[in-house]
Amino acid sequence: MISVNQVSFSVKGRSLVENIRFQATTGELWAIVGANGAGKSTLMKLLTREHTPDSGTIDFLGKDLKNYKLKELAQLRAVLAQQNNISLSFTVREIVMMGRYPFYDASPDKHDHRIAELCLEKTGMAAFGNRLFPTLSGGEQQRVQLARTLAQIWEVKGGYLFLDEPTTGMDLLHQYETFQLAKEMTIKGFGVIAVVHDLNLALQYADKVLMMKDGKALSAGTPETVLTEGNIKDAFGLSVRIIQPESTPFPVIVPDTAYKNNVENINSL
Amino acid sequence: MTETIRKPYRDTNTIPALKSGRKVSVTGAVFLLGFILLGCVIFSACTGALPISLTELCQIVLFKSGFAETAAFEEQKSLVFWIIRLPRVCLGVLVGAALGIGGASLQGLFRNPVADSGLIGVTSGASLFAILMILFNARYFGIISETGGAYALALAAFTGAAFTTFLVYQLSRFTGEGNVTTMLLCGIAVNAFAGAITGLMTYMATDEQLRTITFWNLGSLGGATWTSVTAVAPFVLCTVFFMPYLSKALNLLVLGESQAAALGVNMNTLKKQIVLLATMGVGASVAVAGGIGFVGLVVPHIIRSAFGPDHKIVLVGSALGGAIVLTLADTVSRTLVAPSELPIGILTALLGTPFFLYILWDQKRRRI
Image (cartoon, each protein chain N blue to C red):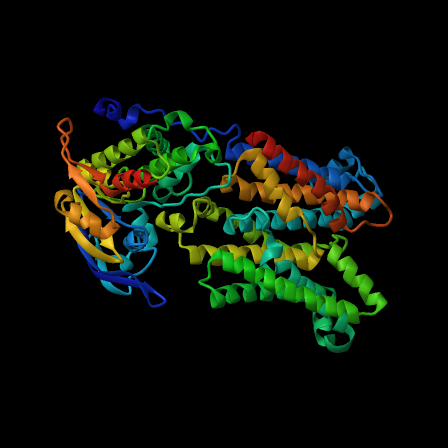
């Protein structure tokens, strides 16, 4: 369990994250949503200990996050960053194997290789194992990085997965597959915390949603209570309508104003 | 839609455990390079103003080690081999290994393909201190010269290398958050400063001193003796043995500093370890052999394009590769214009540049 207690973080007097508190348990998929610059990535960096909070505490699995050694953390949680540039010609398989590094000393055994292979399969990249990473497309690279992240916590009981915009550059099918995979992980007993831009994905897959605005938590709770027309208007400045199509089991968020304005603009010409 | 998304679960044990997919394994590559190095060492030991044949070499070694009863070779050849040739070859191997592994590790740390030990101030610092020594030797450093003997210059160069690197490291912590980009920039700044002072000293030097300075900067293995070999060996061997332990961390660093930290790499410790080890090896090498350019830059690229970018092979491979290149270059440098000698730094840059350009062209061709 991660419990975030009144965490604040600022850089040069500019407050990036302010008084955030929430508790995420294993088996839950948390989506962090908000406009650009709302502090989502900063919060992720605080949760993964890339930054240390100015005030407040983050409790990770019963111990203060800052009391962990980096090596211990590497065996408890995996992080997928927003940007992943690799210029050296590593093969896809070698990149995924890096996820197993915290678990062996000199060289990986068969078991490590199998996990790497399985994770490649899970992200639909099994056929790309021998390809050179820099030659892949952006979405494919992201899927390989996801596979590496999975390989890192594959065997950790009650481990956590931190995904900062995991679907960047992915096509429609793989966006859904990624969240399907994240959901599967929560069912297997992992905790997943993801920064999500697509509110519909958050609505469909998340168990809990944290909505941020200007570094503060605007609302937190189940998707139905957080992702309301009013909250979205407040956080993003965009009017939306939440409709319930007959053919789908879940509601759909559609922008309200953009289309209307366009039509008005065209008519006025 | 769910049909395409859901995939059947597979038991982990039924999955084939495929290896990295490279043609040559790490052990294979190390053995290959090791054999080439052995060949080069033997070739270099046999070649020179006084040629020694392979059979003679065997007999010389066997006699010395006590396996052969009679000395079936000329006494002069034995002396040349034990006193002149072998220490020089050993020094070449040590210096080359240090330059190669130093360059490879710093390229990894800075995530920059043009980095080498010159960037953190090792070479410029050593050069500056050596020149100061040459210039003021007679007047002020009489005491050091007396105690250090012929090694006063080497001692000064090593001190300079260590001091400048320490300065670069501290400055990067002082001016920025101590990330590797700041360190790179501090290195460039300190190098420029050291270069300016070196220029000033050159301006003040006499003609005789200028000649010494020029030759020191071009590098040479001409001063090789068993004493210099034993002085350099501990530093270089320390670097070559301990650096490979950092190869996993260097691989993770390829993913980026924050991703490496998420996988358990402590950047501060790693940076300290690499800078310390690289400075030790390269500083000691520069101290005895002067500034030998291009080996630290080119050799890691050759290894990477031949065996892949895994630091497990890049680090050890660059040490072996650097040793191979320097042994060969030194053989050429002392035979090409015999009985005189060509400074080895000229050769490494002269031969290294076209080869480096070829690698760049080849990499581009392969990517397309």
